[in-house]
Image (cartoon, rainbow, N blue to C red; front, side, top):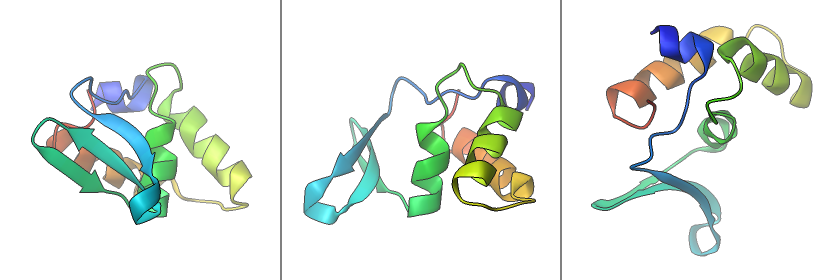
Length: 87
């Protein structure tokens, strides 16, 4: 959990990219692909191991003129960590 709050990073086993054919962001891995909704893609694009959790939340709140989204961001990161997307 502390990694999530410090500097969440996308696992090297996954590659985040935009798929024109599906008009959406996906996570690619050797066994397949995970299609992401727009919110998940925005969050995961910021998981670079440099930004902090608080920094990611602040960026998203500013970009989308939203407040109080930290619980939703944390829930996605926890699920991503459980699924192995986030180191």
